[in-house]
Image 1 (cartoon, rainbow, N blue to C red):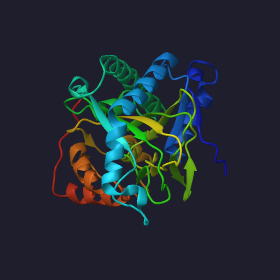
Image 2: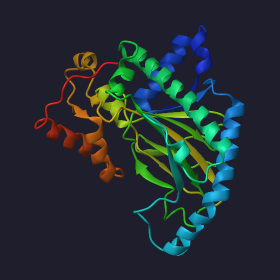
Image 3: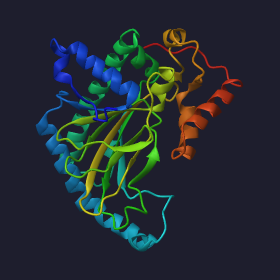
Image 4: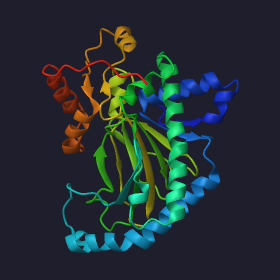
Length: 319
C-alpha cells in the first residue's frame, strides 16, 4: 500500500494537469482525510511574518506562563501516563461571524494586523477548496458553502498553539487523539519540528513538515454531508523532547444554526450503504463534542441520530 502523504500542487489546477490534480484531492479526501497544499496563493512573505510574530509572541507573553503551569502541576516529574491534559500553550482568534482580534490582550498591533490579513486569505482558500470538493462529489458549485452558511454565515476561527520541549513525551501527548468536529481545517505548521500524526489503517503516520505548505484536513461535518464518502480522521500531536513546534490551525465551520445532513444526491448514489448519518443543527453537535472530544466520533453520530427522532429541523437557509 502506498503510504506517501498526499501533496497537492494547486498551481496545476490551471494547467493540463487539472484532472490528475482533482483526482489526487479526491483520493486524499476518500482515503486519508488529510492532504498538504503547495502553491496555494498565500505569499511566502506573509507566512514568514506570521511565523516570526507568532514565535515572538509566545516567547514574550506565553512561555513563562506555560512553565509556571508545568511547575504547579509537577508535570516534569510524572511517572505514569497523563490522560486529562495536553502539553500545549494556546490562544484562540475568532474571525467570523465577527472578529475578536482587537479584544485579545498582549498582541502587538502588527501581529493583529497580519493575523487579520492571513485569516482573510485562509477564508478565501477554504471556500475555494469547498468548491473543489463539490466538483469532485458531483454537487453543484457553492453547495457546501450554502449548507455551512445557515442564517449568520460560517464560523471561522484560529487556534494558535505552541508545543514546547517536553521531558516526558511518552507520558504526555502534545494533543490527545481526536477528530475535528467542524468543516474544513487549514493548518500552517512548523516546518522544522514535527509531531502531527494521523491514524491510517490502524497505524500512526507522520504529517511531514514542509516549508510554506498548508495542511488540510476534513472535519466530522464533511463526513456527514458526504454520507461517509469522505472521512474525518483521528490525529494527534506527539510532544518532542527538543524544539518547540508552532501550529496555527484555522477552522472553517458551519454557522451555529446550519442544518447538517447527507447531501440528497449522495444519498441516492449509495442507498445500499449500511452507515446512515444523522440530520442535526451544528451547534447541538458542538455542545455534544465539547464533552466527548477525545473519544470516537461514532457515538456522537449515534447520539445525534437519537436526538433526530425527537426534534424536527426545518429547511436549510439559502444565502
